Length: 493
Image (cartoon, rainbow, N blue to C red; front, side):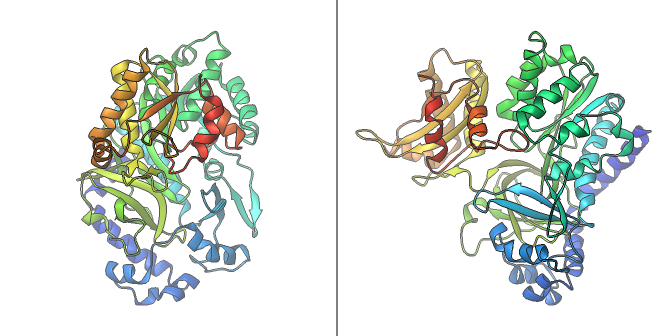
């Protein structure tokens, strides 16, 4: 039954590729009308907004801190604050400067989260012809589906909320069990997941790459070092998202030990933004007709007082943009913190390049995550080594030598010549970032230095700050030494 439905959805997605800009214009008008009787509307005169230019003049770009006064009013029981009525959920997520964030999810916005994941799988079915995986066991790892209440509104992790919407026909094939998903302690939960799944016929595994790698290692440890495909010979599909897959690819494929298809997605508490619609194709198809209006700010302007704001029709291939959304959950001109780069505008496909707050620019170099990941992966390929995890920070306070970028890298296999490996990484980074090249060539910075870290360094670090597991990720880049100094005890002497 999945096959004809997959073709229907696939055809709908294909048609939407050709109407993306017009669909975005219609979505903006729908949002302006939907927000018409809200507190936010009255504060920003949305009733006078007729087009995108009016919208930009009326609705400023904001982050979560600027949204808090409206969120607090919702918590206090008010209706029609950001969107009509009240949210049906708060998605609880960790902020970098604001602590816990409560992102509203409304009756109108929940279909975006559900249909985005569904369409990714159905497009894969239509493209590949493979529907057999739906008959096997599938892991949809989530946060606890148990909800607390904040201001009377059910509140939990987005993955836990979405868990309640897994179709009934997939429930019997879903792992882990509801009881296991409710376990809060990550290592206890992972141990139970291994126990529940290791003897099942798994066909699909979904999660962020760091979690999958840890899961695969625990499976191997409990099963005489067997590869994943030895344990799950019918495993066909890996669904991943949340972080760039490339730094994890070699090690994950080694752990799997066989061929699988990969489906990448771009979900967030604020919305399901994009998914891989073509097997093996570059970039993720932007979800342009699902209650979300997108704006794009050139990444080098994101911190300016009056940044350039572009709608979808004005973006260019190859440029790095900060992503801003307005949604039918009541987020207006909301900067989600991610940067993206379009690889195509016909159709609109993009890649996620990093986080606004995750960069190094101690000397004006503005090195971003995509650049460091690319440099490290190219060097790793040429030296035939595998990377477990890494992070980078500036080292400014040095005596008798030039400052440098300090790389903390946990290797699965250590390069035989670390000095040559560091030179290769530095060379690739110079080729990617002209500002970094100028600083190296001008004698302002010395070439980067790599610290080899002990096994499980990043697991232990995340555990030490209470953020092991789930959707938590190690920042690739920091502009300060907080993470770097904390990692010093795990440097492999």
